[in-house]
Image (cartoon, rainbow, N blue to C red; front, side):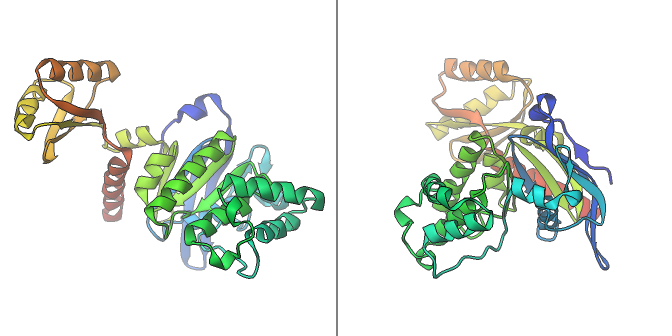
Length: 330
């Protein structure tokens, strides 16, 4: 099976930070990865999507120079990972899905310990620790014992640990696992802040809504194979997700009037009304056509409350379920 790799806007002007070339990984009789080729643009938030056993963690550990591929190569700019693992590890901040914390240390002591492991001079550690605690909004917990922190706080502390040596790229394996909704929102905002600081973030998850709202690019894995990779919106459209809009009306009685009006629009297909006062539809036109449709609905006297593209998370989930089902049956 040949994967689809769609061009990303970032790849047009930016040399990829990471190139994965025909990478496979075998464990005895198990093929964890099969001939993966992928490019990760610099400065992106790149999401790896796949069910359990898809090979996400194996690929991340190879990128972090913690595993050696059975076949193929991984390049960080001009350096091949297996030839210079120590150099690569200095460039990478890796946060595994199961991370260890030392409960008998305070938050500050925990980060100071890892700063020492990374060879950061003692006189610089205090400043780095203070900056990281502020970044992850744990300054008020600097003297709190790690064991007293909530799971969300521990997650942010471990992210700070991954940043202690100022890596170019962050590799986060299922960072939102087990977090409550508020903690997931905080994590998402933190990841965006890190991207704004120039970091490239590679993040795996099976929580598709999180990745759709957070990532600029994605790759879908299944059974160790790459299914498709590229810009999020292009992946969705390529796999049949299309572009969709949601229209919410003030009065449910006028929904049918709006539907009848939209049926006459060339760019609108597959109209549905999944709940009261809400219309969803596939849309094949451009942004200017969207403006014309909205203006026409308003001119028709329809009480529009909201008119917007449909949230990417739901669409990505539909696309993911469809493609993984197709591939499991082939």
